[in-house]
Amino acid sequence: MAAPGPGYVASRWTGNTVTMEMRPKIAVVGAGSWGTALARLLANAGSPVALWAREPEVVDSITRTRENKVFLPGVALPPLLRVTDDLADALTGAQVLVSAVPTQHVGDVFAGVADSLVGVEVAVSVSKGIEVETLRTPVDILGDVLPTSLAGRVVALSGPSFAREVAIDHPAAVVAAAASIDDARYVRDLFSTPSFRVYSSDDIVSVELGGALKNVIAIAAGMSHGLGFSQNSKAALITRGLAEMTRLGVARGGDPHTFAGLSGMGDLVLTCSGDLSRNRTVGAAIGRGHTLAEVLGEMNMVAEGVKTTLAVHRLAAESGVSMPITEQVYLTLYEDKNPADAVAELMGRASRDERDH
Image (cartoon, rainbow, N blue to C red):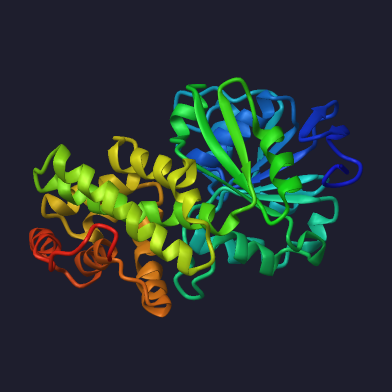
């Protein structure tokens, strides 16, 4: 089997295993908590990493203290990681591109950078969402704006992985998915470390949708918590949320079995349960009576599920898929529905067989 791309990283390709004899130069675009955590992971594994940050205070913090005090305080960053606010500088010479840009900004950030990407052979998207205006996933957006040489060579990396826990080397497992299983396996091996286990998949549709849709359900789980409900309610939301995630995924061409894996059930459980979940935090505050504007005004990081709810609401309608939890989250966030009334409506739906909608 041939290596996924000539001239970088793998000098031997045996079966499904890449022997890493020379680590590639990597550009990580987006220095939020997740982008910083992955830049640290890759640099610690031996790759020279250029991390692009939009915020001058992030560049200053990392340059002076070797720590991203804005988005990932308390985590030391290795010498092989450098930071810059010049996107062309970060991209020049890179062989692998990692996009950690919030979904709604991916298109804007990468528009017009083709000249700086001549050496890039694989792109990796680690964002989780759906673009509101176009209903494109991050991989779709990158496929449209990156050079044609990267057509079909964008890999989605997704799964249950809070940035801070990855950054302090607590064990985690995720999945890399691509149209080409060779590209997925390459990224799998590139990102794998003793504390970060990566699986590979060619079901990129389900992996991307799982990562996006779970954030909407996490907002619902947060609302439930904010209303004072406990474990029974959360279990019901997770289970029925997975059912509607899977329905939409299958309607969009995905494999239902993928939703039972890391990028579906795994990420859903984490995001609905963990205190580090931004989307759950948003929902909890709204359940306690705060407005969406109030909640977002107090956050310095992006909760992807807020905008994704708008996109999924449209996508479900266009796909003819019933998503009652998503519908109630949409009505609560964007039409000022009382969260308690949303719960009452969900519980009062007509009885049916479990495998029905």
